[in-house]
Image (cartoon, rainbow, N blue to C red):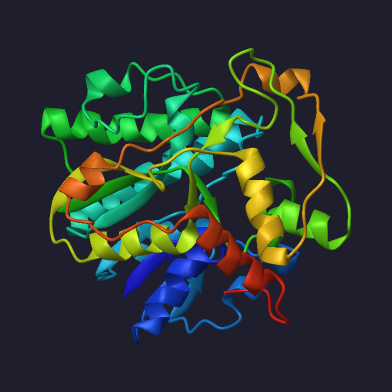
Length: 325
């Protein structure tokens, strides 16, 4: 069986769907559904089991798994409960790392581009401990991911216990279908789509730096199906360890994104620039762009989807009668 933690979430549900599409029905999801629409992400899925995260450690006892795809986390970049974030993002990940190492099970896990902080240290996915220690995440979520990346790196350098394959993926700004449950943490593609469908103006943050014009802050927007393709590729590798950037490899502006959504919907978006909240200004990344060199060197050579194509495919799903993957 393949275990997907966070399998009812955004990226996780796409991984489950892709595995099902290849004929795999021996997929186990570990996640919380809570009250809300999250279950709809799995409405088309075939699962071998569904395990609440608090029961996973005991469920794993005596199990034989082919691989673990660890995507479950408190992924809110605005999270403030440090104890909850450490419990869910760091300690839980260490438990899975130890289990995969002991049982010799490959592990693919989600890191984040949030580990890069303001980007002043660049976006090089070097996985040695010295390089990682130069990074300064700007929020609690990014820090928790950074701690786990460093824990893996420390084991690599000290000869500590690791799975036969252990890949950490630094996701950049992922977008696509199956984000309805995320509320305010949905990608801006979702938010702009709903705004334009209501016939309202799109609100984007003003720039508070002189070197960036309003709305011209840059992000590496990566289509979720490209992310899934990377994960599926890594699941075919029997061994290897490292951190890999997963993005489109090109930075685009928020204005570009809004116009791409408008183009897919056949409307011209009216854009209003608003002040960025004071509490966010010191934690805001003005530019992210994935260096894909190590991903390509690892053997993943498929082209990344353009922003316009990925947005068009996302909008087509969101506008359909069943807006889920």
